[in-house]
Image (cartoon, rainbow, N blue to C red; front, top):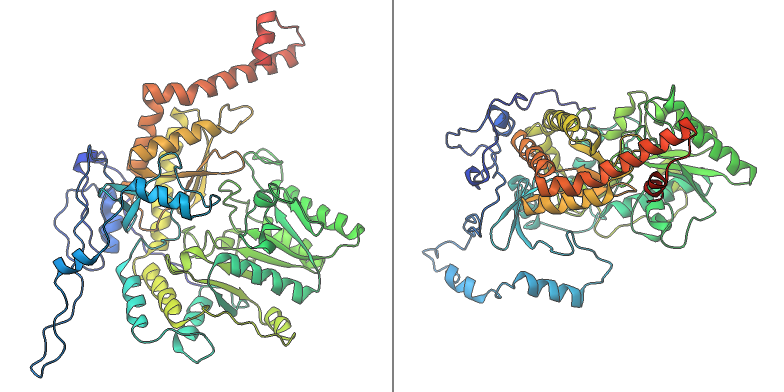
Length: 570
């Protein structure tokens, strides 16, 4: 298994973050020479990778978009009378349709796109027309720092990825029923990142397709039907996956008889918390009890299906050793262990290439699913499994064919993503920047009581916002307000978790030390500012007061005065 050990930057910060007006919008990639910079030492991570990117800014008014590179056009005609030159750039510009305003685009979207397809910041959506690295640009050229787009894994529009797609598109793009080196080259490269027994691959187009196939593989291999999932889990939008996603089915037709829901191994606000003597065994025993109850009803377990790090569930880090104990119970029941790496794979966790490896070297899942970051925005997905499971699936005699899965262009892009991760040392970079970001937030936790927990690994980080320390009540409205205010500061962030109170950080992997400090400084400013502070802390203090009084009444067994009763009732 590959493990990147090369350091990617200097964590120490010796000078303050630049003011918004000082931040620039220059973009360069690869080995392009850079102009001398006065950036602080913690920007060294980007320099070491050789990828200098624009820095977030909050201009007072519209700015011009960054200069686009010249479009490639046909060369001059040959002496023998080759093709004539194409139209001039001005002529091409005249032929393009006029760009719509943001409100016109919004109105057309409301007319033409299903209402269930939601927008970020629905009350005031952003129109994004361009992106580079970890930055996105609206129609006025204003630059936003992207803290949530884990799909653009190695950075938006990375030139190496664009080049790989373009070059292969000029040669061939067809289905996988023909021999082509890209398919086997890509499978071989992926196999080197995984435990040896996960050596058979299926290529698809989306994470939902991958998880649906994983479910089919498990059922065919075990001849069982039932699936155990974690509470609040989300595994995809297909009918088969909505059925195993409590995050979705609780708002639809409810839980099917063959689906069993285990508690999330959350040691901050779950059943067994950080003060429990053995939370690993306690949470694993919950799965064991589910299996026993299912067997009493004549049910048989096909799979335990889990995100290696539950994302929608609140950016949860399961305690090490939990997967091993659960796998033991599941295997004993004749089931298989499926690790969903669609959100968190490909080096995001820093210490390892795959998030399931955080559990320890002695844990190996039976099936691994991949998606989102695998193609850096291009639709690719993959399922990796054992020879035994693959052969059981093939024994049906029914062909598995996916029209676009594993096509030469997709595989070329997948190979390029792996190359960039390795060449730019992004796995080690994720550790460096992620540790720095969590350190900064832990310092803010001391200052701001609304920050209840800071958890994560690499560039998968959750900041749990709470109303009170005793009950850890989710600060849902406060989190929504903060995310909205951050957008006004040109920072794109969102929330997750059952209470929608966990700030989730899953930025492109080129996210820098400087970006981290800029985000935390901005959040500190918003939490400290008078208007925002009143909004964000008023509810926290009121809830804390009620919690303390409630504890006092229960312990003292005294009858509160009428005005205290009014406080408790409110």
